[in-house]
Structure formats: structure tokens, C-alpha cells
Image (cartoon, rainbow, N blue to C red; front, top):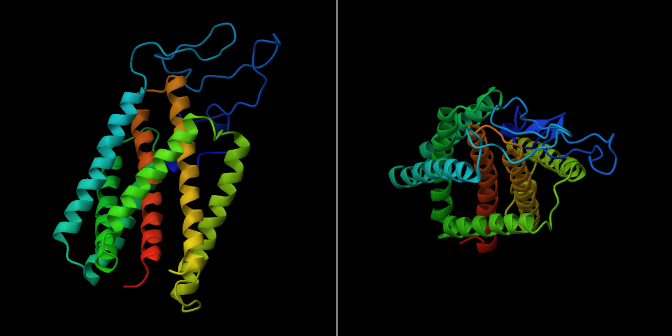
Length: 285
């Protein structure tokens, strides 16, 4: 089972074909023959490991990922998204050509994300490039929503901050426990949601559904939007768990770029869904 976030499915944020930290083997201590958790960064010369049981200890000082690294890289990535979005909003008028540019930017961002996901190591240039093109897409789309539903983007930003903050609080309080079973169930729901959404998009494109089908701006669309936001929160909890395990096990400092990348994608998902919900709540003007 791998992370829902493609950047976390590569080396470093997964081990033993599972999530880092999701070891289902018995823990060492009570049984001297019990299998202890293995350190996924054992090859990292800066990570320490218990020589008796192989259990992870606090990483030695050196080139290891810290929370400060994750915060700084996330600030750079999200800052790039924000700057690109503001520039796109300010410089590009609302028109069909701008909409085409937004779609093109989204496709480029998707390609860059896929390239990075298959790289053996994080490439900051790819991550920053993804953030820039994603920002252009968000800026144009947000401006279009604001033209019809005044103030919707600002409310969506506040909603995204509130939802992500509440998710982090729930995770830190251990109200949400990220286990292998939790991840499997959540991923099944997320994959099913994406597949159904794609089918719905095709049906709407060929005129088989009125008003957007499942993604309409009515009560059904609102319910689907709430589900999408909950899935975004699920992605965030996986991100938090992966980051926590990366720091605990002494991941290389460069992995903090992947952490920032994953968090950015999850927050973009939540923002877009929040934007739709705000528009539905405001109704047609």
C-alpha cells in the first residue's frame, strides 16, 4: 500500500511495501524474538539505529530532515503558488483565452508532478515549476469564480485554512490515528471518488447529464463537494504521518521538498473543493 500522494510513493516515504511507521510486526521488548521496526533510512549515514533491536533512535545531528526544513520548503512552495495566482488574477482578464491558459497550466502542472513522482530524488526546480503553473491555474479560476460569486475565493481560502488547521489539530490530538487499515479504506474511497468523477465528466461532456451531474451546483453537488473535502483531509493526515515518520526515522534533508510538495497538492485539492462549496452556498446571482 502506498501513499495517496504520488510524491510519497517513492523511496523514503514508504517501506516494506507499506507506509513508514505502519509496521504490523510485534514490537521488541516483551518478546526477545519479536521483530522490531526497521529504519527505512538505514542507508542514511546521518540516521542512528539501535544496534540491539534495530529500532529507530533520534537522528544524529547532520543532514537529516527537521520540522523547520518542512516548514521552510512548504512556505516556499505555497508562496510560489500564491504569487503566481495573484499575478494571473491581476494580469489576465476573464475571457475564454484565459480559461484556455488555465487549463494548459493545469496540464503542465500535472505533467511536472508526474515527472517528479518518478524521480529517484526530489528536484526543487520541478516542484517550484509545479507550484508556479498550479498558481496560474488557481489565479484564473479564482478570478472567474469571483466575477460571478463575489468574495468566493477569499472565503475559500479562509475555509481551507480552517479545515487544514482542524485536521492538524485532530491529528496532533490523536483523534485520527493513521493506521494501515485507515489508509486502505481511505484510499479505496478516494480512488472510487476519482473514477466516478472522471466518468461523470465524460458523461457531462457528451451531453448525457444536465447541470454537471454529480458536480452540479445543487444539493447533490454540495454533498459531493463535502465528501471531496473530507477526502482532502484524509490526504492531509497521510501527509502528516509521512512527515512525522520521516523526521523520526532520520530522513535525508532533501526529503523535506517532497513533504512540501505533498502538502501543497493536498491543500490545492481542498481549496478547489471549498471554492465550489462557497459558490453553491451563495447561489446564482
